[in-house]
Length: 536
Image (cartoon, rainbow, N blue to C red):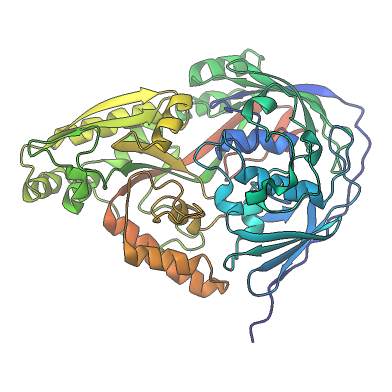
């Protein structure tokens, strides 16, 4: 009989007094958070900001190792039952004590959140059949099927105070409103600060879209005291002004200066920097389902993207190395799969995705498109590093092989809701593995959606492969690591062969900062005030 998997992390509560030094910290962001609501959109800038104000049951360190947070330990029964022991003595920023009721309420809210983008976080809690509280500091979660990565996933689910809405006895019963008697909160209730109540190291002070977010230190936080009394995040989408602001002393830390400017920072003793490889893969998702597709025009009136030969031709038309050299300034790695080699479930030696325009033209002719066709590439212009420039380059490469390509670039506030409604034919994407293994991308994007949207929640292109679905569905419930890794490698190979997702590169993230500071870069690309420390 298989022995239960036991995870026993015991973390001491560090109740340190506030330090004598209490400076302010100003950080310039390359991509602005779209909301204070931590359940609004599963998006890196949003999740990074949320981690300042809210805690999850678990958290991840800079290398994505799972650590205790509001839960101090957890164990699995070898099947589909997880028990989490909750940290005692924790209070929310409004003074209310943290208990198991807050966990039940927060899980319910992810399933009752009418303003969430693309069902964010419901893919995690939608797999729960029961959440029970044997006592005020124990939570027992029963999942529909074994979920070996549940502690990893729960690092992303922020815990709210159940005091923010009227309720009777709270139970995990979304069909009966979980005991909530008032109105479920919506995104605006958090953005104005009214409900931005968490247990995190910082408290909400103000948020003005396009201007910035102000936080103040939570001196009652259960963890180590933070050195910064006040933290301000300022959105500065253009790399030039971000760097200029750092050089002028306006900012203490900046995200993603242009890689070509790193040497300028390196030669200036007033500043320092760190470059950290990430798990974020940049790719294009193709509409392989509809006939016709909204932004594709072909002579025969069909959707050429449905043909695997066309999809392979598109990949062959793209010079990934040139994009990395000329647009990413070398601060990226070519992507031949959806997770960097060496990580769990990734292929150990993936075949290189070649640049071969002649082969691309030949495949297009074989598919019945010797004269090519017309397509629009949809992209953000303020989310991923050089996103619109990358898309322009890809459009030029496609046009060179006969696929006449236009680019429709827009702010992510417009882009993501439209993509969620399946309005695009070829859409840029960027996905960082929140779990640190290959299942993160494979279960979310190419999987056929299930009824509860616990998998396939972002399958906007209609990709469908029964063999792949069988592999990924088996993998995500397999507790044996060796078997799960093998299944994930097989599933990843199937998606690459299908060609409905065209990977380009893995981003590296650059942070630059004043020399009197130190910063540890993160593989998840989160910019965290908690990781900015005085150098001495």
